[in-house]
Image (tube, one colour):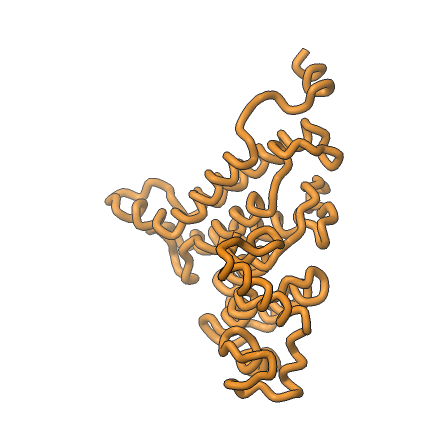
Length: 275
């Protein structure tokens, strides 16, 4: 009987996506302090720094389940269609998990690998689910998500995850560069938050290699890290290196600066306020 009702009327009454977004964002904000509460106890209660990641991932699954009940890709109910904030809150939680490459919360020698693997799996699972230009993404389980376009915050959080959970290496450099290219050419959302996160992904705890260092050095002279004007004045950004940043970057920067001054968020889902 319930199956027939859902087939006819869609998702049953329940929490709206706005409610889920609020809870997800709250968890993301609290994640940096979660380990402090765990470590306060004298006994190891099994915490490993990933409870929040598991929680937000389960909440996202609940959102997607209601979305599918309402028709999935054909749904138009604003109360059950996931937003970019829904996905980004999961990525933000992953980026906020405390991790320095060592054991976490008094765990065993395998704790750090488990935390790293679980966070990376969750982050790339969500990133893959989001589509470019609003197209429907596909996860590794071939489970379609909502037609949500990645924004600057998506890439900033992903780059923060890469910087923190993958050690300095050519592999980390290639992954970070792939995200940078996608943000620049595929989705066209490059802004200062993405640039700074990209630099972090190439410098945190060490270098990824000379070729990446050279590219980062050019970006530092051109982007929001130094805050030059459109002509590159006030920085060491020359005509050759400035071409590293596409024209869309300057347009994004200008439009989001105007949006902040006007007291509203950016038009691509709130990238100016990192949602």
